[in-house]
Length: 257
Ligand code: ADE
Image 1 (cartoon, rainbow, N blue to C red):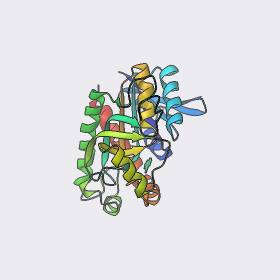
Image 2 (cartoon, rainbow, N blue to C red):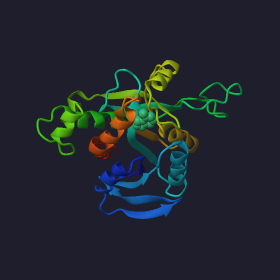
Image 3 (cartoon, helix red, strand yellow):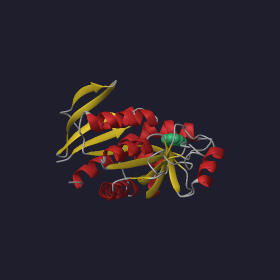
Image 4 (cartoon, rainbow, N blue to C red):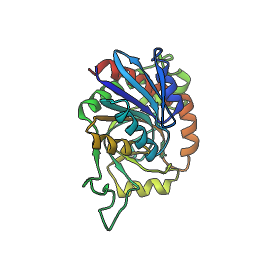
């Protein structure tokens, strides 16, 4: 089985993953704890990336150089940009772009200098399996008349998760927590096809591209990247996001061979 890295940006999320890997042992490199174990027959390395593009890029580099992982799966939360993206929805990235990359006039805006590209694609096979896994899990949330195995009925009602959806498309990354309607609008106008914004995915995509290693990125929408983003984000992480993504990853590992 492929040696797969599970990377998350949040402590709560890593805790949910480690609960499913009772045999995991820890190796510390570059100040990060890399947890090596097994889950659904896969050899897994689970790690907290920390937050931001540099943190994500150095985590990815250690995973590829020291642990020779053959695939990378990133999970976390994102702010919704497109109107259709509601809190509790899930987005699976088909490609990622660094919205704060701008070396113009030397290179076109957004292009990563000397790579000739602004958009970094995720792996189609992993992405497809992730979309199917997300549909399976969100289907359970939508039809929950009592607590689902991973979410209380109260959380489902509090966050209005009865109509959650799975989306696929462009995800933006930058070293900025987008927390104003004005900034969110600016991004939507500049990149109308963007579904969501976060702080790590495109950095991982660039490193995985350099190494030729397949990547998939799953994000749960925790806020609308507007003036309420900060409050919504904190509450959502505590009550929902970590359990949600652990359930989707479990489903993914069962399906993906
Ligand atoms: N991750 C979750 N919400 C976000 C936001 N509003 N901006 C950037 N990253 C996020």
